[in-house]
Image 1 (cartoon, rainbow, N blue to C red):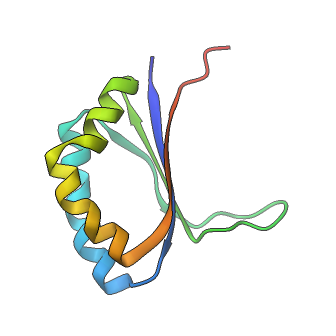
Image 2 (tube, rainbow, N blue to C red):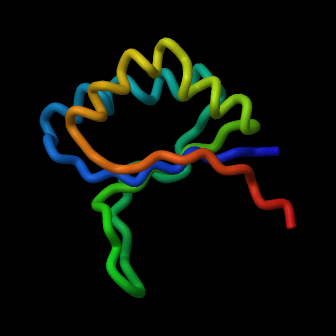
Image 3 (tube, rainbow, N blue to C red):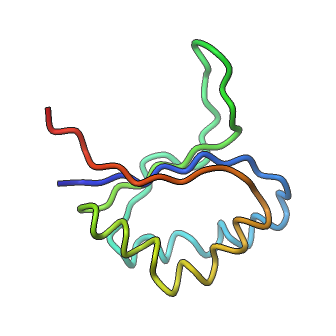
Length: 97
């Protein structure tokens, strides 16, 4: 069953964030992930939207998403994102209702 990694990101240093953004796609693909949403600016229909950027990745399953996040390749570039942004990251399984 598919799983999704969702990142809510507020970029605090756009120039520094570019180093992370340049390296992330290759690492994501290596672990079977694909972008569904990348950096989209939402059209807010209700309430206050707390972030300026959202990323949604699809992986074949929860294990693949967790392997990606824990991989040496991602852990190497993760500090680049953390130094240039703030936010939250979660992994969720696909709803199969």
